[in-house]
Image (cartoon, rainbow, N blue to C red):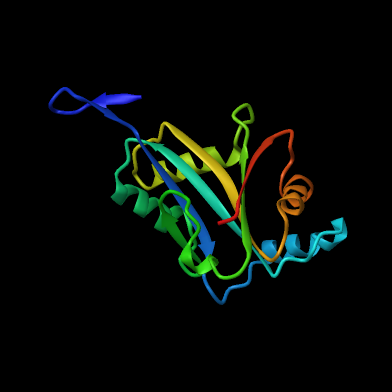
Length: 170
């Protein structure tokens, strides 16, 4: 969708991606629970698993408005940090062998978190976004093959009927 600016030109909606991560020194209980499931499937136990909510927000919002939403709505300022960007793996996660698994609902599946994010944005007085997508990034540290990570993604991290999964290892 586009809107006309003062000069009559079309201005496209912006797409912002917000990733929320745990601050150093705070345990990741969800990540620890996931890591404990790997050996149950005959997979090597990862050294660490971090679970990071990811939000893709499309609309007529400014960088400043997205910063406000990330700080005041999407992340807990005591235990979490956030990053607005393209989804590149953060420098702090580049030590040693690792994988990144992103899990998103398929387009045909309704997203229950979307309504909460939309309401939260409205409560902050921000413009209503055209689209909100909510996913999860799993940062898995440890020596694993692509086949092992794919197995974990299918059996632990997602439901293939409703989720789309992407794997990355830099």
